[in-house]
Each structure stands twice: as C-alpha cells, then as structure tokens.
Amino acid sequence: MKPEVSIVLPAFNEEAAIAKVIDDVQAAMKGSKQAYEILVVDDHSSDCTAAIAESKGVRVVRRPLTRGSGASRRTGIMSAEGQVIVMLDADGSYEASDIPNLLKYFPEYDQVNGARTSEQGTLKLLRTPAKWLIRKLACYLTSTDIPDLNTGLKAFKKDVMKKYLWVLPDGFSCVTTMTLAFLANGYAVKYIPTAYHPRIGISKFHPVKDTAAYLKTVVRMVMYFNPLRVFIPAAGLIAVTGVLKAFLSFKFTHTLQESDIIIFMTAIMLASLGLISDLIVAYNNRS
Figure 1 (tube, rainbow, N blue to C red):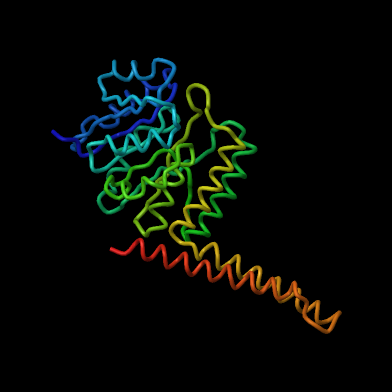
Figure 2: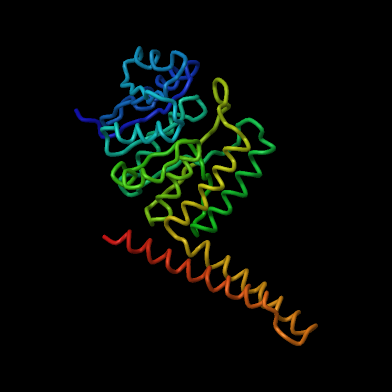
C-alpha cells in the first residue's frame, strides 16, 4: 500500500541514536490504521548512521554533500510518498509516542507541532532568553501566540509545504521557517505539549551563529509574507522621533531644521516601501 504518512528523520552523525529512534517510531505506529513509511535522510554522515538505518529495514536517502538540517528536510519532503509528513529529530530528544497524537488532528489542521515543556539543550542560560525574545518577536509579527517557535517535532500536509520549500534555509532555522510559512499565510496550525529530553550524542548547535540565524529567519519570513508588520511600525517610530525632534528644534531655534525634514521623509519612504512590498506579496499570492 502507498503510505498515507511519511515519518522523516533528518540525520547527521546520529549513529548512537538512530536505531532507538526508529524502534520508537515503529512502536508508536504499531497498530495504526494508516499506512506509513519511515524515511531517514542522511546528510552525508561520516559515521554509520545510514548503514544502521538501512539495517533496520527503513528507506534511506543518502545526500552526496553535507548541507545542513534544512537541506535534509527539503530532500525528505520531496522524497516522501505520504500526503502527511511527520518530522522529528533523529537524536532521541523527542517522544516518538506523540506521533499518533499529532496525526489525529488531520485533515482539520494543516500543521501540528509539538510544543516542548522544557529546555534541555546545551547553554541553557543563553538559549532560553534568546529563544523567548525571538519567539515574542515572531508572535508580534505574525499576530499569533506561538508556544514553541523552533520545535523539531511537527506534522504537516505535504502539498502545502511544497509551496514554501523555496524559503527553507539549509541550517537549523529551517524548522522556524516551516512554522512561520504556515502561520504567515493563514493556514491552520495547532500545538500540543510534548516532552523534551537531552539529546543522545554531541549537539551540532552553534549558539551565536544559529541564534542569529533564528532572528534573521523571523524577520525575513515576515518580510516575505506580511511586510507591513515590519515597515509600518518602523515608519511610525521614525515619524514620532521626527515630531519630537521638530518640537525641540522649534522651541530652541524657532524654526525647523533640515534634519527634521529628512527624518519625516525617511518615515514616508519607509511607509511607501512597505505598501509597495505588500502589493507585491498580494500579487504573488493571487490564486
């Protein structure tokens, strides 16, 4: 039978965890009425990740070059046969037993995410406040409450995700992009609480580089799909600054300065640029 569900495991040097994760997925799907496949996407690992996965009898796609988690997820989406795709990290940090709970919300929802109830990653003192700030920014920019912005446990409709493969970066911020692509375009997204465990093996997370990538991803995604959420507040802030500056200039010099005019013109240009960007987005999204 052609699988209805594809469970995709992007993996890079996960030989210590991959066998357990596959076993956990099979145990979670045991007795499921939905036909499913397990697809491991090996990002050109230097260890035995792919060989171990193949020995478990699952389908393995071997990438010829190491390009990152996002590149592996794109490959997995294009290679998957199911119309609903479930993704979880191959490091044992997520509960595979949550997969049936994700799937029960389809087809009502377009994407269902596991919202982690704890932070178990390395450098928690840095990661926790950084993630909170970026998540709050994403909530504002998308006008949506997002309990977990960069969860690695998610299920989604393949035909919807394929429309936004072009925005997926190669690195860790790809899962953030996948969430924001659905939210920013009005698709139904749901979150369910999920446990989160310390990963098996060595983390590939780079705190400074990857945190900066998350921040850039949030702003970039909103610029792609809802640019007014960026341009209008920025133009408003500059306009308020211009009013205060003009008031002080007139109070102390009884005239307006050239810099006051420049500030107002900057605000007008930013607002105009936002409107033009919004028209471009609307034109490209026309059906």
